[in-house]
Length: 62
Ligand SMILES: [Zn+2]
Image 1: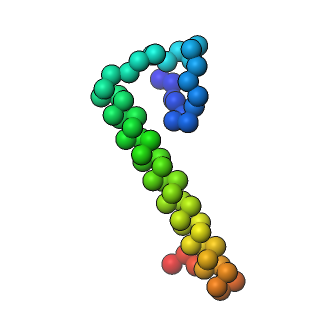
Image 2: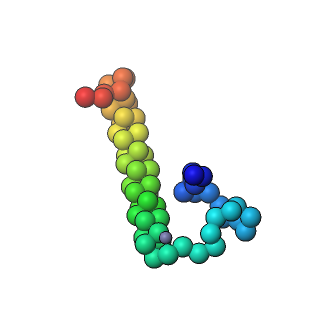
């Protein structure tokens, strides 16, 4: 089974079906929202670590 990166560009010769059913579309939408939340959470945590690093000189991970 081929793994599809969710940010992969679609192309006519990628071997993937040109249409998907509603159920698969909903699953893709759900994965996309999860990815967006994960990226935003990652950014928030990195910003927080940077913030605490600036306060104390060392990262705080407790
Ligand atoms: Zn389907």
